[in-house]
Image (cartoon, rainbow, N blue to C red):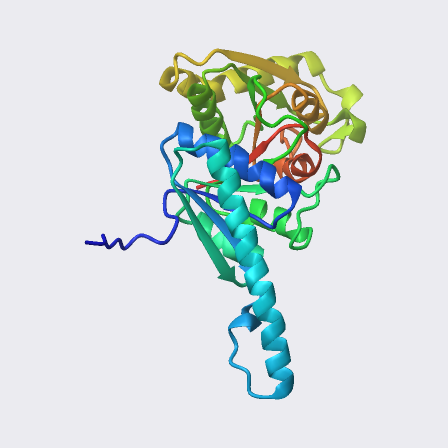
Length: 299
């Protein structure tokens, strides 16, 4: 007898948005291995034009309908190929597929509400996702929970998990996610706290040369230690390296992305002279980092 569930399709699964590109295939393989390692299902989503479901009422409609049916069949083949890629990467993983009618970003944002994780790939080194370049940034900005953008020449490599810490309550979920990932992967966690940007020449309207930088650095060291304290107690087996920088959050995290296996950032920061602006920083990293980037929204 078939089992009935009130949960949405793909609930608690790792959801992957696919488009048939090489970057999408890389993301599917990465997500399949993660799903298999965590005993989670993998749910593959591909979006198609809703006009394919419209009943034809004229010769022109019939022509459009036939054309869209061909597109529908091509979309089905994209899903089937993605499923084969997933099973090749992780033969034991449970895979479901969905051909959804609607806008890719809205579809994936809705799916994220019940997913364990949403995963996307990038089309090329420049970082634009198929289904319009805006899809990637829209999903990372508005999805529920965590989104991973699979980037880099070797997304399966070893290395630490690196998290950007801005010192705010808003960034707390990113720290928790980073500790959980490091524990799952049995690797070191590097916490990077770059608390301002000297290239702007000022902190909160005051020239940075007028401020006691050494005193500020000590305070920021203490702030980072405070933010990590509860998590180190919760994850005592995770080795932690702390790095405090005066400026350059984007540059430091990009540097770490060359050797990290995963980069974790929040979706936005506080702003202000102690803020790490993780809104602009995260948006830049998902387009330019050299490893997979996890973006974690508050709540």
